[in-house]
Image (tube, rainbow, N blue to C red; front, side):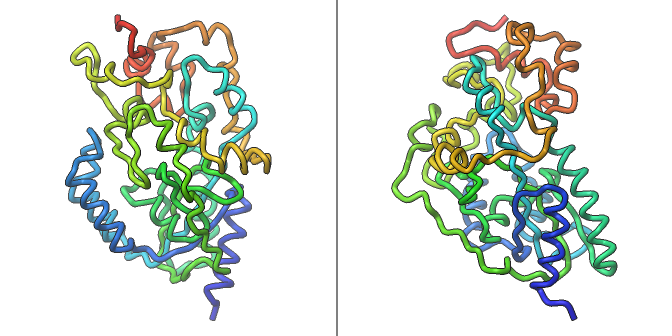
Length: 325
Protein backbone atom coordinates (compact mmCIF):
# COMPACT_ATOMS: atom_id res chain seq x y z
CA UNK A 1 0.00 0.00 0.00
CA UNK A 2 1.39 3.41 -1.00
CA UNK A 3 2.34 5.82 1.76
CA UNK A 4 1.55 9.51 1.94
CA UNK A 5 5.22 10.18 1.24
CA UNK A 6 5.35 8.15 -1.98
CA UNK A 7 2.01 9.56 -3.20
CA UNK A 8 3.19 13.10 -2.53
CA UNK A 9 6.47 12.48 -4.32
CA UNK A 10 4.69 11.20 -7.44
CA UNK A 11 2.21 14.08 -7.44
CA UNK A 12 4.94 16.66 -6.83
CA UNK A 13 6.95 15.28 -9.75
CA UNK A 14 3.94 15.50 -12.07
CA UNK A 15 3.18 19.10 -11.06
CA UNK A 16 6.79 20.26 -11.29
CA UNK A 17 7.00 18.74 -14.77
CA UNK A 18 4.27 21.22 -15.77
CA UNK A 19 6.42 24.07 -14.45
CA UNK A 20 4.84 24.76 -11.07
CA UNK A 21 7.23 26.49 -8.69
CA UNK A 22 6.11 24.79 -5.48
CA UNK A 23 3.75 22.04 -4.36
CA UNK A 24 2.23 21.60 -0.91
CA UNK A 25 -0.36 19.33 0.67
CA UNK A 26 -2.95 19.87 3.39
CA UNK A 27 -6.33 18.66 4.61
CA UNK A 28 -9.42 19.87 2.74
CA UNK A 29 -10.71 21.84 5.70
CA UNK A 30 -10.29 25.32 7.15
CA UNK A 31 -9.07 26.09 10.68
CA UNK A 32 -11.70 27.45 13.07
CA UNK A 33 -9.87 30.79 13.37
CA UNK A 34 -10.17 31.30 9.60
CA UNK A 35 -13.83 30.31 9.54
CA UNK A 36 -14.48 32.90 12.24
CA UNK A 37 -12.49 35.50 10.34
CA UNK A 38 -14.42 34.85 7.12
CA UNK A 39 -17.73 35.10 8.97
CA UNK A 40 -16.75 38.49 10.41
CA UNK A 41 -15.38 39.66 7.05
CA UNK A 42 -18.71 38.86 5.41
CA UNK A 43 -20.76 40.39 8.24
CA UNK A 44 -18.80 43.63 7.90
CA UNK A 45 -19.23 43.49 4.10
CA UNK A 46 -15.55 43.96 3.40
CA UNK A 47 -16.03 42.19 0.09
CA UNK A 48 -17.30 45.41 -1.53
CA UNK A 49 -19.61 44.75 -4.47
CA UNK A 50 -18.49 41.12 -4.82
CA UNK A 51 -21.87 39.89 -3.62
CA UNK A 52 -21.18 36.33 -4.78
CA UNK A 53 -18.75 35.98 -1.88
CA UNK A 54 -21.61 35.98 0.65
CA UNK A 55 -23.99 33.70 -1.26
CA UNK A 56 -25.07 30.53 0.52
CA UNK A 57 -23.73 28.20 -2.18
CA UNK A 58 -20.34 29.94 -2.10
CA UNK A 59 -20.16 29.66 1.69
CA UNK A 60 -21.09 25.96 1.52
CA UNK A 61 -18.19 25.26 -0.82
CA UNK A 62 -15.68 27.58 0.88
CA UNK A 63 -16.40 26.60 4.48
CA UNK A 64 -17.51 22.98 4.18
CA UNK A 65 -16.36 21.83 0.70
CA UNK A 66 -19.90 20.77 -0.18
CA UNK A 67 -21.56 20.31 -3.60
CA UNK A 68 -18.34 19.39 -5.41
CA UNK A 69 -19.49 15.98 -6.66
CA UNK A 70 -17.32 14.16 -4.10
CA UNK A 71 -16.08 14.70 -0.56
CA UNK A 72 -12.53 16.10 -0.70
CA UNK A 73 -10.03 14.89 1.87
CA UNK A 74 -6.92 16.69 0.66
CA UNK A 75 -5.85 19.82 -1.17
CA UNK A 76 -2.86 19.90 -3.50
CA UNK A 77 -1.62 23.49 -3.33
CA UNK A 78 0.30 24.80 -6.32
CA UNK A 79 2.20 28.01 -6.92
CA UNK A 80 3.50 29.32 -10.25
CA UNK A 81 5.93 32.26 -10.37
CA UNK A 82 5.09 35.07 -12.81
CA UNK A 83 7.84 37.49 -11.77
CA UNK A 84 10.37 38.47 -14.44
CA UNK A 85 13.11 41.10 -14.76
CA UNK A 86 11.33 42.24 -17.90
CA UNK A 87 8.07 42.98 -16.06
CA UNK A 88 9.96 44.68 -13.22
CA UNK A 89 11.62 47.08 -15.65
CA UNK A 90 8.41 47.73 -17.58
CA UNK A 91 6.21 48.55 -14.57
CA UNK A 92 8.84 50.89 -13.13
CA UNK A 93 8.64 52.99 -16.30
CA UNK A 94 4.84 53.05 -16.67
CA UNK A 95 3.02 56.33 -16.12
CA UNK A 96 -0.33 54.54 -15.93
CA UNK A 97 0.54 51.32 -14.16
CA UNK A 98 -0.72 47.77 -14.67
CA UNK A 99 -0.16 44.95 -12.22
CA UNK A 100 2.64 42.61 -13.24
CA UNK A 101 0.40 39.55 -13.37
CA UNK A 102 -1.71 41.11 -16.16
CA UNK A 103 1.11 41.92 -18.59
CA UNK A 104 1.07 38.50 -20.24
CA UNK A 105 -1.49 35.85 -21.16
CA UNK A 106 -4.42 35.28 -18.80
CA UNK A 107 -3.14 32.95 -16.08
CA UNK A 108 -6.54 31.27 -15.84
CA UNK A 109 -6.05 29.92 -19.37
CA UNK A 110 -2.43 28.90 -18.86
CA UNK A 111 -2.85 27.22 -15.47
CA UNK A 112 -6.07 25.44 -16.45
CA UNK A 113 -4.29 23.95 -19.47
CA UNK A 114 -1.42 22.80 -17.26
CA UNK A 115 -3.92 21.57 -14.69
CA UNK A 116 -5.77 19.51 -17.28
CA UNK A 117 -2.56 17.66 -18.10
CA UNK A 118 -1.91 17.09 -14.38
CA UNK A 119 -5.46 15.81 -13.84
CA UNK A 120 -5.07 13.40 -16.74
CA UNK A 121 -1.92 11.91 -15.18
CA UNK A 122 -3.41 11.82 -11.68
CA UNK A 123 -6.52 9.99 -12.88
CA UNK A 124 -4.33 7.42 -14.61
CA UNK A 125 -2.22 7.02 -11.47
CA UNK A 126 -5.19 6.92 -9.06
CA UNK A 127 -8.11 5.63 -11.19
CA UNK A 128 -10.54 5.14 -8.28
CA UNK A 129 -10.12 8.67 -6.88
CA UNK A 130 -11.59 12.03 -7.80
CA UNK A 131 -9.75 15.27 -8.61
CA UNK A 132 -10.95 18.79 -9.31
CA UNK A 133 -8.85 21.85 -10.07
CA UNK A 134 -9.57 25.47 -9.21
CA UNK A 135 -7.92 28.55 -10.67
CA UNK A 136 -10.24 31.19 -9.21
CA UNK A 137 -13.05 29.02 -10.59
CA UNK A 138 -14.38 27.73 -7.26
CA UNK A 139 -15.24 29.89 -4.24
CA UNK A 140 -12.63 28.14 -2.10
CA UNK A 141 -10.10 29.80 0.20
CA UNK A 142 -7.04 29.17 -1.95
CA UNK A 143 -4.77 31.39 0.16
CA UNK A 144 -5.74 29.74 3.44
CA UNK A 145 -5.30 26.22 2.09
CA UNK A 146 -1.91 27.06 0.59
CA UNK A 147 -0.81 28.71 3.81
CA UNK A 148 -1.89 25.60 5.72
CA UNK A 149 0.28 23.46 3.42
CA UNK A 150 3.26 24.98 5.23
CA UNK A 151 5.35 25.97 2.21
CA UNK A 152 4.46 29.69 2.45
CA UNK A 153 3.24 32.17 5.03
CA UNK A 154 0.66 34.94 4.80
CA UNK A 155 2.19 38.40 4.92
CA UNK A 156 0.73 41.48 6.57
CA UNK A 157 -0.48 42.54 3.10
CA UNK A 158 -2.49 39.26 3.07
CA UNK A 159 -0.54 37.93 0.07
CA UNK A 160 1.33 34.67 0.47
CA UNK A 161 5.12 34.77 0.66
CA UNK A 162 7.57 32.01 -0.23
CA UNK A 163 10.94 32.31 1.53
CA UNK A 164 12.89 31.89 -1.71
CA UNK A 165 10.47 33.14 -4.36
CA UNK A 166 8.77 36.18 -2.81
CA UNK A 167 5.06 36.75 -3.47
CA UNK A 168 4.74 37.17 -7.23
CA UNK A 169 3.13 33.81 -7.96
CA UNK A 170 -0.25 32.47 -9.02
CA UNK A 171 -2.20 29.86 -7.05
CA UNK A 172 -4.06 26.77 -8.13
CA UNK A 173 -5.72 24.15 -5.94
CA UNK A 174 -6.51 20.54 -6.80
CA UNK A 175 -9.05 18.97 -4.46
CA UNK A 176 -9.13 15.19 -4.15
CA UNK A 177 -10.69 12.44 -2.07
CA UNK A 178 -7.25 10.84 -1.91
CA UNK A 179 -5.82 10.94 1.61
CA UNK A 180 -2.45 12.68 1.22
CA UNK A 181 -1.74 14.04 4.69
CA UNK A 182 0.37 17.14 5.30
CA UNK A 183 3.36 18.27 3.28
CA UNK A 184 6.27 15.83 3.63
CA UNK A 185 8.93 16.59 4.66
CA UNK A 186 7.56 19.10 7.09
CA UNK A 187 8.61 22.38 5.52
CA UNK A 188 6.49 24.62 7.69
CA UNK A 189 7.37 28.20 6.88
CA UNK A 190 6.78 30.51 9.81
CA UNK A 191 5.82 34.18 9.62
CA UNK A 192 8.92 36.25 8.87
CA UNK A 193 7.24 39.67 8.62
CA UNK A 194 8.38 40.62 12.11
CA UNK A 195 8.02 44.33 12.91
CA UNK A 196 8.08 45.36 9.23
CA UNK A 197 5.07 47.43 8.13
CA UNK A 198 6.21 48.71 4.75
CA UNK A 199 3.21 47.21 2.98
CA UNK A 200 0.78 48.76 5.47
CA UNK A 201 2.33 52.22 5.23
CA UNK A 202 2.52 52.32 1.41
CA UNK A 203 -1.19 51.65 0.81
CA UNK A 204 -2.72 55.00 -0.27
CA UNK A 205 -6.31 53.97 0.50
CA UNK A 206 -5.62 52.47 3.95
CA UNK A 207 -7.06 49.16 2.80
CA UNK A 208 -4.65 47.17 4.95
CA UNK A 209 -4.40 46.34 8.61
CA UNK A 210 -1.92 43.66 9.71
CA UNK A 211 -3.02 40.44 7.97
CA UNK A 212 -6.39 41.94 7.02
CA UNK A 213 -7.64 43.52 3.80
CA UNK A 214 -10.71 45.70 3.32
CA UNK A 215 -11.32 44.76 -0.32
CA UNK A 216 -13.72 47.67 -0.81
CA UNK A 217 -10.78 50.08 -0.37
CA UNK A 218 -8.15 48.10 -2.27
CA UNK A 219 -6.94 49.63 -5.54
CA UNK A 220 -7.00 46.21 -7.20
CA UNK A 221 -10.65 45.88 -6.25
CA UNK A 222 -11.44 49.44 -7.33
CA UNK A 223 -9.91 48.99 -10.78
CA UNK A 224 -11.08 45.42 -11.46
CA UNK A 225 -14.07 44.34 -9.39
CA UNK A 226 -15.79 47.69 -8.77
CA UNK A 227 -18.23 48.12 -11.67
CA UNK A 228 -19.34 51.65 -10.70
CA UNK A 229 -19.47 54.03 -13.67
CA UNK A 230 -18.21 57.52 -12.78
CA UNK A 231 -20.77 59.00 -15.13
CA UNK A 232 -23.29 57.91 -12.50
CA UNK A 233 -21.26 58.58 -9.36
CA UNK A 234 -17.94 60.21 -8.60
CA UNK A 235 -17.12 57.92 -5.68
CA UNK A 236 -14.55 56.09 -7.79
CA UNK A 237 -12.69 59.35 -8.47
CA UNK A 238 -12.35 60.10 -4.78
CA UNK A 239 -9.58 57.53 -4.42
CA UNK A 240 -5.98 58.43 -5.16
CA UNK A 241 -4.83 55.36 -7.07
CA UNK A 242 -1.22 56.52 -7.53
CA UNK A 243 -1.40 55.96 -11.27
CA UNK A 244 -2.61 52.34 -11.16
CA UNK A 245 -5.18 51.64 -13.88
CA UNK A 246 -5.42 47.86 -13.49
CA UNK A 247 -4.60 46.15 -10.23
CA UNK A 248 -1.95 47.40 -7.82
CA UNK A 249 1.42 46.02 -6.72
CA UNK A 250 2.42 48.70 -4.22
CA UNK A 251 2.30 46.48 -1.13
CA UNK A 252 4.32 43.79 -2.91
CA UNK A 253 6.83 46.19 -4.44
CA UNK A 254 8.04 47.39 -1.03
CA UNK A 255 8.09 43.92 0.54
CA UNK A 256 11.68 42.92 1.42
CA UNK A 257 10.94 39.39 0.26
CA UNK A 258 10.39 40.73 -3.27
CA UNK A 259 12.66 43.76 -3.32
CA UNK A 260 15.43 41.84 -1.55
CA UNK A 261 15.21 38.05 -1.59
CA UNK A 262 13.45 37.43 -4.93
CA UNK A 263 15.61 39.99 -6.72
CA UNK A 264 18.80 38.62 -5.17
CA UNK A 265 17.78 35.06 -6.07
CA UNK A 266 17.02 36.28 -9.62
CA UNK A 267 13.59 34.68 -9.50
CA UNK A 268 12.20 34.40 -13.04
CA UNK A 269 9.09 32.76 -14.43
CA UNK A 270 9.66 29.69 -16.56
CA UNK A 271 6.49 30.34 -18.57
CA UNK A 272 7.03 32.52 -21.70
CA UNK A 273 3.33 33.42 -21.92
CA UNK A 274 3.60 35.25 -18.58
CA UNK A 275 6.19 37.66 -19.98
CA UNK A 276 4.90 41.13 -21.00
CA UNK A 277 3.29 41.25 -24.43
CA UNK A 278 5.15 43.33 -26.96
CA UNK A 279 2.50 46.06 -27.32
CA UNK A 280 3.23 47.33 -23.79
CA UNK A 281 6.50 48.74 -25.16
CA UNK A 282 4.87 50.23 -28.26
CA UNK A 283 4.88 54.07 -28.16
CA UNK A 284 1.62 54.06 -30.15
CA UNK A 285 -0.12 52.08 -27.40
CA UNK A 286 1.47 54.14 -24.65
CA UNK A 287 0.13 57.32 -26.19
CA UNK A 288 -3.48 56.06 -26.18
CA UNK A 289 -5.27 57.28 -23.09
CA UNK A 290 -8.63 55.81 -24.08
CA UNK A 291 -9.34 52.86 -26.38
CA UNK A 292 -12.14 52.02 -28.76
CA UNK A 293 -13.82 48.66 -28.29
CA UNK A 294 -11.99 47.29 -31.34
CA UNK A 295 -8.64 48.49 -30.04
CA UNK A 296 -9.34 47.07 -26.60
CA UNK A 297 -10.16 43.63 -28.00
CA UNK A 298 -7.09 43.71 -30.21
CA UNK A 299 -4.73 44.50 -27.37
CA UNK A 300 -6.27 42.44 -24.56
CA UNK A 301 -7.56 39.23 -26.14
CA UNK A 302 -6.65 36.34 -23.79
CA UNK A 303 -5.41 38.82 -21.19
CA UNK A 304 -6.78 39.13 -17.64
CA UNK A 305 -7.66 42.70 -18.57
CA UNK A 306 -10.10 41.48 -21.24
CA UNK A 307 -12.52 40.54 -18.46
CA UNK A 308 -13.19 44.12 -17.28
CA UNK A 309 -14.24 45.42 -20.72
CA UNK A 310 -13.41 48.63 -22.52
CA UNK A 311 -15.68 50.94 -20.50
CA UNK A 312 -14.03 50.05 -17.19
CA UNK A 313 -10.57 50.23 -18.79
CA UNK A 314 -11.31 53.75 -20.01
CA UNK A 315 -12.81 54.69 -16.67
CA UNK A 316 -9.64 53.57 -14.94
CA UNK A 317 -7.52 55.92 -17.02
CA UNK A 318 -9.04 58.83 -15.13
CA UNK A 319 -6.83 59.87 -12.25
CA UNK A 320 -8.07 61.59 -9.12
CA UNK A 321 -7.75 65.11 -10.50
CA UNK A 322 -8.75 64.28 -14.07
CA UNK A 323 -12.15 64.77 -15.67
CA UNK A 324 -14.01 61.92 -17.32
CA UNK A 325 -15.37 62.45 -20.80
